Amino acid sequence: MPDLSIILLSAGHSSRFGAVTKKQWLRVENTPLWLELAKKFRNYTSNDKIIITAAENEIKYMKKFADFEFVVGGESRQESLLKALKKVSSPYVLVSDIARACVDKEMIDRILKHKGKGDCIVPYLKVSDTVVYKNETIDREEVKLIQTPQLSKTEILKKALSQEKIFTDESGAVKSIGGKIVYVEGSPEAHKITYFHDLKKLTCLKPPSNDIFVGEGFDVHPFEEGKPMYLGGVKIDSSYGFKAHSDGDVAIHALIDSLLGAAGIGDIGELFPDTDKAYKNIDSKVLLKKSADFVKSVGFEIINADITIMAQKPKLSDYKDKMRKTIASILEIEPFKVNIKATTTEKLGFIGRGEGVAVSAVSSLKFYRWVGT
Image 1 (cartoon, rainbow, N blue to C red):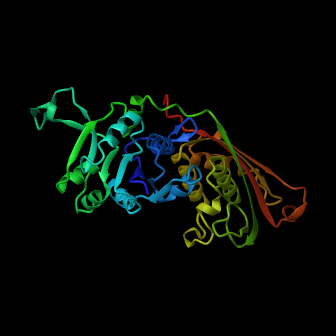
Image 2: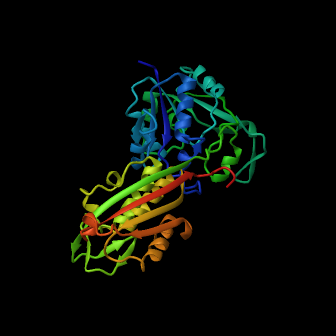
């Protein structure tokens, strides 16, 4: 059994980052940042025991990229780390933040070289500027800027973090219970991404690729008498609606599937199962908003959408423009980037018999362009 496990913390909300896309999902060429860093640690340490904390709604998607061990994170860094530590049985654990993206091999080697020399091995940077604390100038030689990754003895770290106190890093927790801290030289390249402007300080990250991703969605719903009809986010003047678990907006359902397909996320049934009472009769515009927000949070921008509604009845020509503007508003793109087409099937098939409506949708995405924004 290896004596070292690696924990990478990627469950944060990126609330201070200031972008729709979460920082852990910024693309480095085609690779999300969390995966870029995980691959670095695997290559630098030759260690396969890598545990990644993540938001619960992202783990299924993350598993499409790699076979690391994923753990649902908590509301705080410390809570996420404690959850991950439950999966660690090795005597040592190396912990880092996904946001510290440009960790280099030399820095990790310096840390691992000191394994066993203390309870927590901590990289740091010296301060070259004058330092003032509470209006008093203090000796800058006594100031250290602490970085990650930090190497700890597993059992001591578990004990330290289990206190009724919040710590911002492992060394603070270990020191609080009398553990021995060993400081080693860090790296000026290992700058942490907290705010968007921090990206300008990182030299190791390549810009996202210019690839375009296209997804197709298709859905069908039969009519149901006495139910309101919603189509393309618009209420249609009709005595019948759609038989469905939600409001039955077949156009939005097809659009959602096209967005999820372009991002490689799955389909509408995986995100919003019809067995869940929470989605009973739900407004499909709410589902579209949730889907679009998720697609954008994991690294994409929506380029456009093209929707074809196949219906013998009702007549839709008076509603197409409102549908287009409604959908564009939800997707937060210009109205001209949403196209709505309506056609009949010349009275052929179940559509031609007036039994229901079918919709085909195509969407295109690109990676969020964090460089040059």
